[in-house]
Image (cartoon, rainbow, N blue to C red; front, side):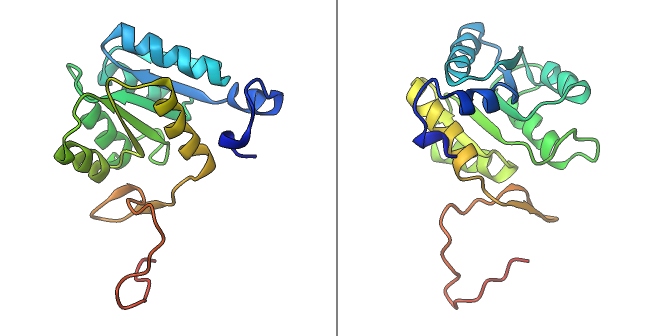
Length: 172
């Protein structure tokens, strides 16, 4: 059952999303509240808010979380370092969880940096509820395979399944 094909108030979807544990890490309480309201409107019930990456990490190490939505710029630990830890640390609570980066850093270099450290989806502030919902729908409807190598840990950065120029798939 796809999120994008389900009508609002669908009981099957709401029952499923109600069991998904989401962590929002954002130092701006207004943004965190907006994100929480969007999630609740979709049917999520288990939502926790952290005011920075270090608080989020403490929570992640002691609680079950299925998805993270994090801001980029926070202090003392920003979202980039939180994602790096989650993707690469030997003591990461879950290297494979979906992570949405929510940020005002919209330049190409920022998008590429977030992608290269393992962010699953990227949302630019200011954002609409529709945009956030579409990224969550992508996570649910079209989950990307996960790459685990010495050079990169995170979701497959390629969104299209195009074979290399010589036509031979080289990934294992």
